[in-house]
Image (cartoon, rainbow, N blue to C red):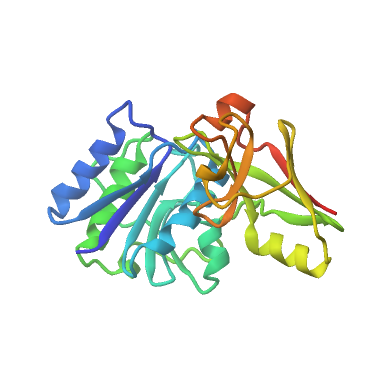
Length: 266
């Protein structure tokens, strides 16, 4: 039985994610369900695309990834079932799978129209429960992707908002996620950082945010000598990450998602 993951903006205060799991287990009692996160900011499609893109490669081939960040629920936007990179993805056609499409241009996408893959009654406000959860369970139980509906040749994509070399010697990026510890994760990949550093023969740099400038990248959180200082490390997503040792960096220093970040080389 395939693993099914859930990524949503539902939070944990309400019963929405639990109900989705109940629907899946009613169809496939042996389905293995893994929560990636339910703390995507409400309606934050770009953030959902980033988190899902960072997480799904760590799951085995054949796994099924349900992403429900769906401000257009009940509208004319399509519900999708996708095969890409040996894995499956289900969710709204609003750009949440942008990074999957970027990584696997040979993807196959289908619009979910087969009522046999859905709940008997479809709410206009909860497609996670009535369309995506039952579809994922049927897929996990062996239903062929091609039976879900017609091909969807041009799914919606959003601006991936990757970090880039803005001007010679300046990388422009942004904070894309604040984790449970208050660490502020940026989209500045260390491969881009190292490439610019090497090709420009630079010997110094500053990581610049409106809260401060950091001129060294630490190997671990424990290397920070000052318990309250704004520091930078390379996080587990292989991107630059602001942190404060033993403190909530986002609260202490006023870091927010979408804040601009620069790396200025010298």
